Amino acid sequence: MTAAGHPRHALDEVIHAPVRFSVMATLAAAEEAEFGFVRDGVQVSDSMLSRTVATLERAGYVEVRKGYVGKRPRTWLLLSRDGRRAFDAHVAALRAIAEGRALSAG
Amino acid sequence: MTAPTPESAAALLAEADAARVRDGASPAASAFLVTLGCASAGFSLAQPLAGSERGVGAAATVFALAVLGATAALLGGRGTTRAGFSPRFGLAMGLWGAVLAVGLAVRLTVPGLAHDWSWWAPLAVAVAAPCLVGAWRERPR
Image 1 (cartoon, rainbow over the protein chains, first blue to last red):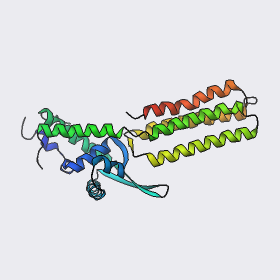
Image 2 (image 1 turned 180 degrees about the vertical axis):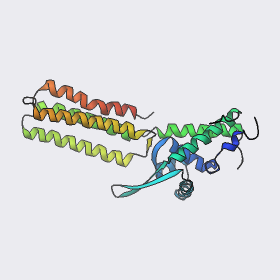
Image 3 (image 1 turned 120 degrees about the vertical axis):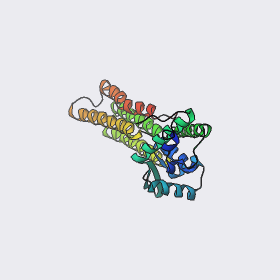
Image 4 (image 1 turned 180 degrees about the horizontal axis):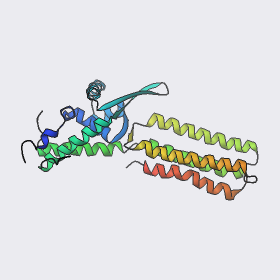
């Protein structure tokens, strides 16, 4: 395995942080998820999740949709196309690291 | 950025898999489709039984209330939807709407079908089928 081919080079710095990874993993499995569902699943506070989502939104990985159920405001989170692609690439790099192999091109 | 060890990378992959399982657990859409399918079948089966316009109106009211209740439960209880939910749900709803619309249109244009079991019983199955298949595809697992 060459240094350039090491899969750690394919890891995404934005996604690599633990809470961001957990949020991305939750959203990757869903079409969209409600803010409270993600907060409870990832086990973080509202403010922590808000900050995390803001970072992912700035990176273009997460989209935020606000709406109402009755009179109650709801916030829905979903991965953007770029976010899904970046997460898939990040997971592929993790898989290569876990299996101790170089990342295949493409 | 600290590169993960093979062990920590495997742990992260396991977390991603766990998230996939967790996100598949929302029953709201499945329950909605089951309710819609059963209410539609019930509405169809009530037609030959209804002896008057009033009976048809009562069946339509029960059907509408069931669908409204299921919709409210769907909107209120849906924490997440699995990847690919919209096309699957849209297909089920589209087929349901098409079958129901064609069924009612035929009923209105062909005389003598109002109390004919041989029309309404198959229609009940046909109108429920897209919803029940959709519910099965969205079932919690």
